Amino acid sequence: MAKPVVAIVGRPNVGKSTIFNRIVGERISIVEDIPGVTRDRIYSSAEWLTHDFNIIDTGGIDIGDEPFLEQIRMQAEIAIDEADVIIFLVNGREGVTAADEEVAKILYKAKKPVVLGVNKIDNPEMRDLIYDFYALGFGEPFPISGSHGLGLGDLLDEAAKHFPKHGQSEYGEDVIKFSLIGRPNVGKSSLVNAILGEERVIVSNIAGTTRDAIDSKVKVDGQEYVIIDTAGMRKKGKVYETTEKYSVLRALRAIERSDVVLVVIDGEEGIIEQDKRIAGYAHEAGRAVVIVVNKWDAVEKDEKTMKAFEQNIREHFQFLDYAPVVFLSAKTKKRIHTLIPMINTASENHALRVETSVLNDVIMDAVAMNPTPTDKGRRLRIYYTTQVAVKPPAFVVFVNDPELLHFSYERFLENRIRDAFGFEGTPIKIFARERK
Image (tube, rainbow, N blue to C red; front, side, top):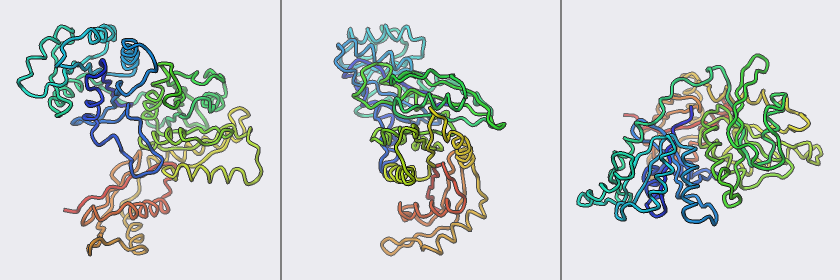
């Protein structure tokens, strides 16, 4: 199930981005060591106690040259559409303003939980400033300080009370869920129709036709699948239509519901920087990935073209070196038969669990082949390795000092694990822990 979504809404200059950064903390740059992966700062993952959730900073959105109040309205309405819980942020030092009341009017109609945060209450003597905000009609105002981090715990406690109580997945465990992500007009909807064998999704040459994620069920050779189509992700600054500003948010929620993510690339246009950004979302989410080069029928080619294109992909998508590449044409359905087997392989590897004894044999053989590194006279010692999770597979390596496990040696161990067990199509994670 997708994680709950919290949106921070309010007029400009009330500290939305400061509060966003406080809540997100260090999670805002999850994969900073991996080239080619970037994160959009308006949307991030966050944790509070036992809760994992996603958070939207509407203050990070530029809605062109719209008038002041129109910008507020558009930001708030989009956040209302996307969020499970809304944090309505106001400035305690300025009191209730006309713009605050405009935002409140929009939120009254939302029929969604609203938690009122009064920012810039930097010390206890200022607490009396919150009482005017009862007039907004959202119950108890929570005094907070973005600059000092005060009061955020109480605010998040209240927000967490309204998180949806997710039960079991809406689909069975045996169902493979996969989503399609990519720039607008790379042929995602056409690819869905080619897999389904029917015109289930509207196909148009106008970029951005698909607004929301759409679930389609299909059975192939006895295996059930759910296809989650998503709105195309368009580069910031290129689009001024409100709904497309947040198409990335919908796509990210679809990614979280997926077992496998198909990163669709336009074979005719080739790779652009935005393709790497989009693929980074799937990688960061820990989902299995298959890179799909669509419109291959439109490419002039010889016997070397496919190999050269794949090599180009490997150079641009170094962080997806585990992802297989499929070349096909949704329009002509040529090579479409190669896609489902690759999805099956990626899904199986995403959920693969290996025996501890065999895993440790592989690690010990790897150490014998390439001895552990030393730092300032201290050598890394690996005592024991165990798999602790699947989807994606995660391994804990117990060592004498976690700081001695450098990134390069960690990559070496990952490669040896992949050589032994495959794991094609899925990221794997390795964590170092000190043996007590």
